[in-house]
Image (cartoon, rainbow over all chains, first blue to last red; front, side, top):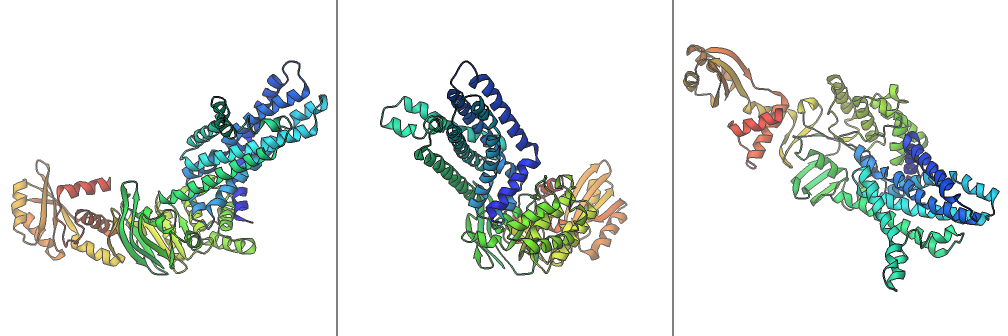
Length: 240
Length: 334
């Protein structure tokens, strides 16, 4: 088994051996279900609008779940002292970062997949295409991947889990606010800033059933860069 | 095996290790002794590639810790001051994880795990979750993860801390079993606990090596520094006068502990101890107690540390007991 696999497997057991994984999954699904009932189903709407509302809310719950899932990854091990085992083993820092990210991504994917009964209800009772649902879920996975990687970065930087969560929230908020900021500046700066927007610019097309290469590239690049930064942070900690 | 050359390590402005140089040969078992904050843990972390030196060079088997940490990590097993165990895992799962991280798998992993179980007497808790184990057992699990891959260099940071006397004896036996197979570095701040364990002891103080030698050599140095403590009934001035008649008594310190009670500390050769007792008794004073202050390596280390702290270099032959040193020593004991 590769080093990434060894680390990802241990992290997965960490999620499922302790209540944390189940708790995060249950809370996310509960909130998603409540939002679906109160917001998406409120009033008379086209079923495609119901799906769009559901996906917009889900991008929020996915983000919160991503922060909760990643904040422990490095910070908890730093506090309990187990990080030392990884750092004194012949494993590259990048392998540790990717292994941990992968485990959180698997858990988050399961949580996202578990919510599919809600759009299935719309599909059965209303009139939406499977393609729309699939595009929406692909978008959720990508939002999840990007926010998880920012969470990994927060955890790599922080000493405590709380601090890791706060840092991750701040990073995500910066990307979230990019859209609002773009609205108050003049072009061409507006286009530049808007292109960093985590939700409006890049997720909304998925929400409407549109898969665009540029959006996929944005999320994959953001994930890559945040994981690269995390690796550098971990490496630099040897100098402290 | 290990060459440390003029290594310093700063945490911000704080200097943890200062201009440290030493060599360790393959197969040696070396103990690092020092107070908390003396730089032992930092030195061991530098050797295990967890930290990088601020200046100087460290090489392990000719590999440099800055340029080849990955290769060095393959050679070492490291137990930090708190065992790096995942509480939710069972002992077997944990050792499998530690073994796989070091590249073991399949039958080789099974064999090595079995060997680690035997070395650390863990068979009866193999299936227990680590969260249910006592501190002593967790410490053993920590050692088991450090030896599972048969590393050339084994680094144990405070392996004996927090263990009860029975566990200490077992731990010493366990380290004894590991000798020969590995080059072993271990640290402690309570030297008596690793007596008869190490080939060589490096006494660290304020980031430097204050003294080094075998246990016997350090003990011999202690003998020269040993002091005699007396509890005497009588007036302070009379006690002082009586002791002044013994030329062999040096560094005499008197302390009034009660109206008719004087606490005396002095240095004297073994042969002249009788003279001290006789002088007290002949002066009509009451000799209530007379004993040699401590012994064992603990005191060597305390005294060498004091010495190093006060004057580095050159080492002094005898250290007069001054109030400041006495205060330092009492802080150490508390």
